[in-house]
Length: 375
Image 1 (cartoon, rainbow, N blue to C red):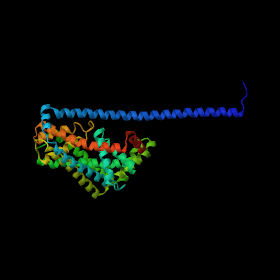
Image 2 (spheres, one colour):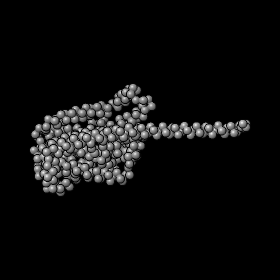
Image 3 (spheres, rainbow, N blue to C red):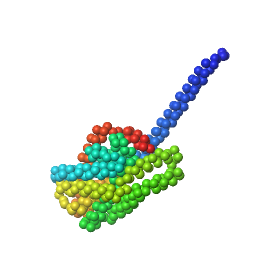
Image 4 (cartoon, one colour):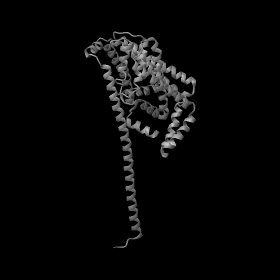
């Protein structure tokens, strides 16, 4: 065996070192990919569970809505409707969407003043996402667009969305209790749900108000819990998200801001109830505005349940039941009205949101990456 020179030995060692580094790099890359695939697998599993749970719930509610109906009766009512009444209903509905946009603009002021013209497409994108994807994914979509266009952290904007949903629920409950003295008693099974939703939203409001008023206390509580249940390497990252979320609750620290959000939320839902009233005139029945307020409140409380995209079933079954039992409307008429109303609520805003979505050239991989960067 020939003796190698020092230079040859060094070159051989260097080649071995490079090979080891390459293998280590490939191993690290493989581990990274496996971890990424594991995360995606977990997300896909949870998403599929949510999706199929929503499908099952929607099937149950649709079955409930169509029981005892004859297709010929429904078709007769649909064929005889005066669809011109949908035009003023859609116009008043978009006034409500504009009011929603103003409410979000008002809540975002502590972070950045953004014009209504720029926020309106984002609100429409949020509606479209909620109507097309499960689990109210539209809220994440609009928060992502806001982050991309105005550099507001998604956790901060999602906090404002939580506040919006909280006040929406409270207004729905208010509508129910305002309408009850002027309408027939609601079925006992709905009383249970109304009481449950009322307690849920009232407790949530109290908790959010306390957190908004005492953010330092909320942060200390997070630190105490995090030490026991969250791995150390994630605590700082999640702490940053908690801080940004607490910042997003800034609008709850002022009594004037809380009042403005509540008043605007009331205007939003009154506009939607007006749409119910206009669409009613397309059919051969009439109930009081209070019955429509009750219907609006009940159906939108039920749409907080998991369901197929577009709230199929969870919107329709309670609506038919309220018109039938409380309003005294024949079930075929009530069903025909409810599905036309549902379509009139779903199609225009979804179509506009999809247009804005396409204009923004959004895809879910971008949203997923932005969410991962937040965490």
